Length: 280
Image 1 (cartoon, rainbow, N blue to C red):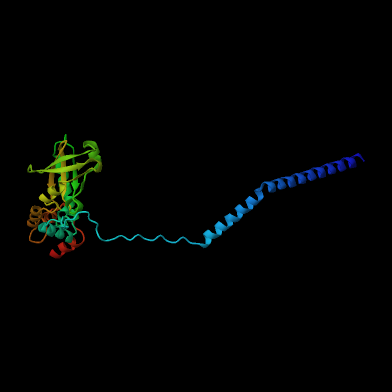
Image 2: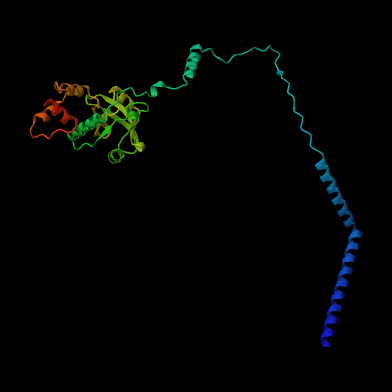
């Protein structure tokens, strides 16, 4: 019984609160209407809608371009004189046109390989001679053997040196290096330390000595800024002629004839053995 009374009292209290709240809301709305705020809000909303519709329906017209008068406005009453700021350099124009025709390229920067092509045996023989020559040099002077390839003696004329040799004996900076040949003729070159190579003068040395692919060069560091260079040609005309004279009348070289005459020599094999049987 007491529970029913408590629930009915709570329900009546909630109803009274809602009634008071509804009355308060109605009083506030009436107060706003008296002040004219509601009418003002409705007019502002209507004006905003109209402005939005006008923007959507009307496009802005493009701006008219200004027209400039081509006639020049002069303040002076004196007659206008024509002045030419271009000088007449006929020879210079002819020179520039000729440079444009060839593409502006300096043809002296490089050359195609015009040397002879050496065999593998000739290159090995030149390298062994260079190693023997290196052994006869002063041991206190650092040295190395370098075999030439086509990029060293033609086209870009860039000579890369052994990295280990350069790091041990040469600085990492760029400086002037003197290249001296066997006859004492000197050539100025530029050593680039961070790239461990010779440039800016090596081209003149290579062309002066007609270096070819396969030639072996011995570089001796005589001083801190001087290379003494010894050249061993892969195709040596003197050696080729000497080998041709060493051949006997049968077409064999001197070494082959000594091998046939020596009883202790190892018997020949293959075609040489069949040739000797035919002679007997």
